[in-house]
Length: 437
Ligand code: HSE
Image (tube, rainbow, N blue to C red):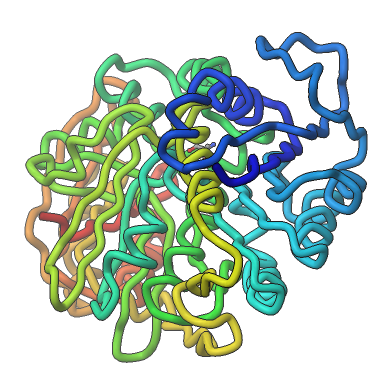
């Protein structure tokens, strides 16, 4: 049997502890599958005394992950610290430069420095595996990088943040407040260390930027993503969406358009009957539309210790099965140096349907004024409904519009016009509608 694969784990939080524990519990099965054993020989974390439910006494302890990357007697450096700068970045770079394979779940790091780190890995002939960085336990990286070879991707979209989907699901099904749902997501270990990364869409944007590179063969460009989180979604939106046959999801969408690549993360109305609308709780789902295959939808556990650890262990096992001299595939599906520059489509040219919820003064002519602003901007309406809402003052009404396909620029102009008309008592709520099967 080949020598054991020596694994060093940096970061022993929810995911790191699960990886260490599962490598022990599944040791016999992994050895059978890989033809060699996987042994944790080094770990790095700040607090040595904390009980993590796993015996790590046989592993060398490093306070500094960069030291572990440099001096640890390891073949694979597993980075589960998180964060896009400082120690995790330095440690991953050091490990790759030292000829060590790297496995990481760090979407923020890859989103910012993935291409330059891939260049180092490819130059050194080592693997940089990151299945756990996108959509938790769903094998979407392997699927896009390997199984879809030859396919031209036109659109990739999905629910990629378990915390947001958990919050939206419970807000809808149980009528619970946003804050209470978020507190539960934190308690269950789904949320990021700073949960604003979840709810403001940054985490989804990090993941989307990685999928965009794989989908379109371009450099990663998270800074070009249009971003809106879910913190201003209210029960009124959820109820109005439901009445119209829609459900609200935080989607990340990347699509090829005539003017470039559109990348956007925002709360989205999807038809209640669509498959993606049935994805509930912490579950993630990624839809990939290609010329050869058509639409593929992958769904599964998107956050939490075991889900993420499953993907990390799959990546470590791939390294264990690889052999020296074997030509590894490029990190982002094509050599990092050959990734094309990112060509950004402007958000104002985004085409699609829109849900617009307005809270208005209940007076004659308001309805007509709103309709005129829409017509002036060439917006055709699928529906316009006015209703009283128990939560509103007596002299206020809710008007909900659903547009036919139009552009972002037209909707922004129309809503600005309605706002200037002085009929609104609150800020207009605009939610994009996404085509989904
Ligand atoms: N905070 C993330 C989520 C964890 O809620 O999906 C997985 O990246």
